[in-house]
Length: 111
Length: 113
Image 1 (cartoon, helix red, strand yellow):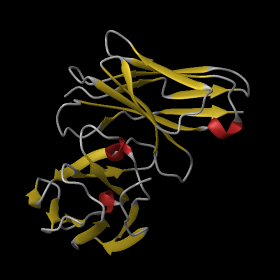
Image 2 (cartoon, rainbow over the protein chains, first blue to last red):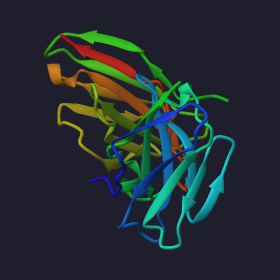
Image 3 (cartoon, each protein chain N blue to C red):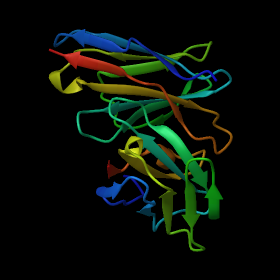
């Protein structure tokens, strides 16, 4: 079973910031948090990964509170091309948990 | 940068036939993963291989088998195909001994008629 819970869907408009929160109450000490983006008929694409506090790259930021029981993916100034499904996965290198996709968040961006 | 290569991109088979899907991981990646994604569903983990040995097993049917070869490419063999096997099949690769994320190919779309 997936160790994560996300909203099923979200709507936004171009230029807005979108925050998608993932709950992972049973996260283990060695677990990392990884987010993927998937477009229709394409393989999931890695967006960002983190362990604690904040991580930022050229496409997104990941906020992780001190208790690590949740995480928030932040997409700044979304565009129509950000319409996709976003998945949060939790696990470490040596267990199967990191391989389990739960129900992702379907983000729809409107013009 | 080189990505995960899957072949074929599309495959049409009839019920009870067999199918073989191939996956070529990113160079130097030692672990390969297979996923199945039905229409409107989330990816389901099937099986993974590390250094040519099966490492994790998910919801792979007994009719399916897979292996990883000495050159690290992997093949997913599917027998006695059923209509419900129609799906996108993704392969991913990574370096196991790090917190490396999975890198996915663009999948093989299998249609069983």
